[in-house]
Length: 577
Image (tube, rainbow, N blue to C red; front, top):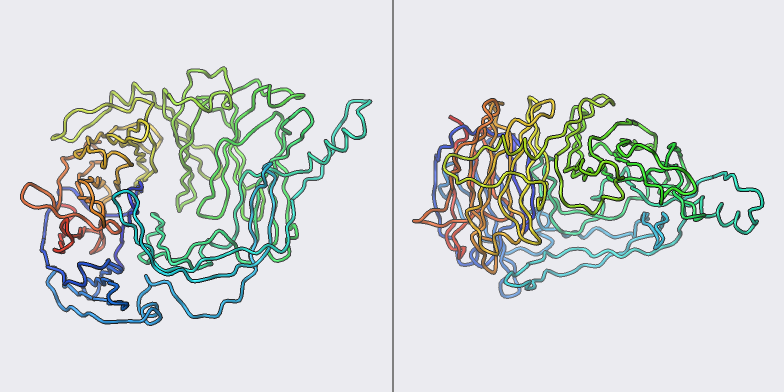
């Protein structure tokens, strides 16, 4: 079994789902090693743990006198040094030996691709062409107090050869006496398809760029060094669009799902989705199984003239479009709140779908479109769809969150979730079906304390856990705090890790982990324990790999270095009793 790496980029927020066992963490081993001069002045390109050999491999890279030195360190299970081997490699040789070096000598043939994008009016345009490429050398630049290093990568340019604009065939009943010119304009406008969402059946990793990418729920242990805004010519494109008519600026009550071949831009399928009343999309998301999920809400009268608006402001619709542009699921439901700011849609491996976000029922007489800019919420809505049917849709009031606020024993009281100045994060679900949704206080560009919502299998709030930031400098609060929640193998507890930011250097953020345990049945949270950082020492985890889970995910390895990157630091923590 391979280990799992958790990656962070800058100070972006990732909620990471994994599996571990932490009831009362126990520090098993902790060691330090002084790095060589080359390693100190280079960057860490590779970290790998071999489960069978129980060995760690680290590769540091340094540009030196127009040469590139790759220094490989090997450590045993308890972090004792096995070997240290520096070697000089060419770019081509390094790319063949290491997967974090994105360079190849394969001939480039300007592949045919298709781009999907709206024009200035919002109408969908399919653009077919080719891509040329050129190599961009490694470089570095300064942003504020940070030095950002960029790997060498291929730069791609799109050369357009052909374009089309998808259309819908329509019929319009005009009022007798409508001038022919007006009819023609209305018909031409109504044929247009305006962008809602699109996807391709080709992954977005066809074109190599040399940049590393991380997909938190993939469970993979590789470096993602390819990304693209293009689709390969052999693929198909699925578009979800909305019909629009310029006559009286009216929304038509029709959506469409279209499938096109990227090879010759021919249409392969069309599905029309009609509504009795004017309707608009309030949220959309491409799911991991290559389906498109959408939530729609009714429109007020001003948007649907000359038609009539839906008299029920709470009449919402859930749609799901498959990779063949067929309507896979359609569920009409009544939302408890006319304002529902959906944060995310989660698709589980078993096919269950969760939809969640902040909501307000204070002005339910108004339509979503009229309330979209409101920023104060009085409840939180959570919805589950199972086997194509609505399982539950719950709403939890601000008062209920206040009643069920739980804090670590060693932490001072903090505010409960108040429904405003709050940024919702992602969701993590236990094997038993308990649901966790996190978020953080946010006022302007400043971030504060963290709240973690814990719901039972039917969407009822069990507890709200609060975390008070230890580091409160401007640097620590100017972006979202990195944290992770994941289930332990005992299926009874969750691990909660918060990475505090204690400043920065020119090369890195100074991040150290604080770890606690959540009891799923009791709905309580333990004290947080810091690793690598106390009054006597200060080591900081590697910004790109803040934690590595090993030994069937029963143990966590934190590694990094001191502030000046001179001393390498390891610690292994047993997660569980």
